[in-house]
Amino acid sequence: MSLSACLGGPIGWQRISLNRPISPDQVAFIRHGETPLTAIVEHLGSPDDMVVSGDSTHFRYYFGDAKYFRVNFGWGLRFLIPFYSPDMVLGGGGAGTHIFQVTCDDNWVAIDHSFAFHVSSTRFRFLPMD
Image (cartoon, rainbow, N blue to C red):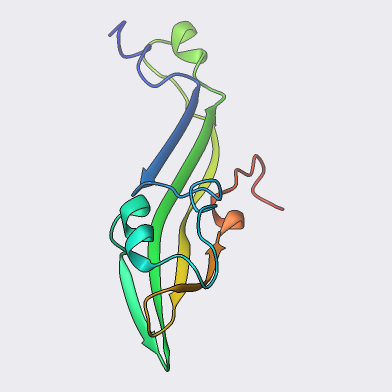
């Protein structure tokens, strides 16, 4: 019974990342019209998705991020009232998928690359209203 009060403290912060996140520093080597797809695959690994559109091909790398934060204001009462511990929890979080996309021409040379971040879905909000 004494250990149950110690489990799951008053503040909880969880973060889960799916796949390896790609940063702008990792893709700084890509030069438009010069870097072949083989060099990109050597640095970043194989892409998750490939879409053919007209005379170009888009390669996409997906990486996800989920965050959750919670505060239990009633956590300290379990030491004063051991048989009844009220939970007063305020928490929030979000999850989002981020994308890095490389566009190649017919010769498999990179002609463009960009990131798509879903920042608003993975940001912490202390209060439920924004």
